[in-house]
Length: 120
Image (cartoon, rainbow, N blue to C red; front, side, top):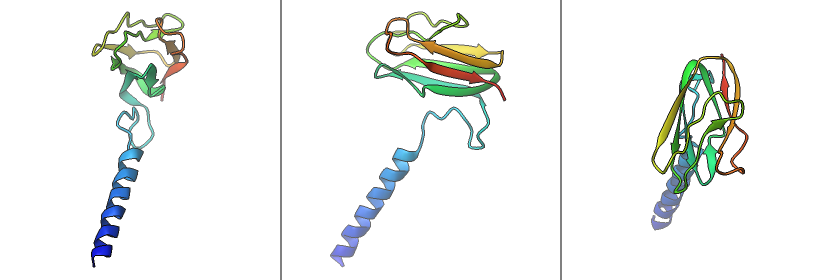
């Protein structure tokens, strides 16, 4: 009986890990796959996460710096620029025009090629 209890405990633990690891906490899209009106991007470990978000025209993206270093979220074509975001600071931008917006961090050149896709 003790062996069955241990196996059940292990099975439940593995199931919890699989469920927890597979669940996205920053998913910018609803479960039906359509772009949303809002998305969140975390700046952490010198990366934008997620690197690609989808929003509808009129949708807003919020970037939050969760790193200890300052960062920016700056569009390559000048559509938006967060200026310097220190730890804990956020920047919001509303995308009214459909298109693909590629951005990077001006302070850290290796933080490049993140994307906001705006459209239906």
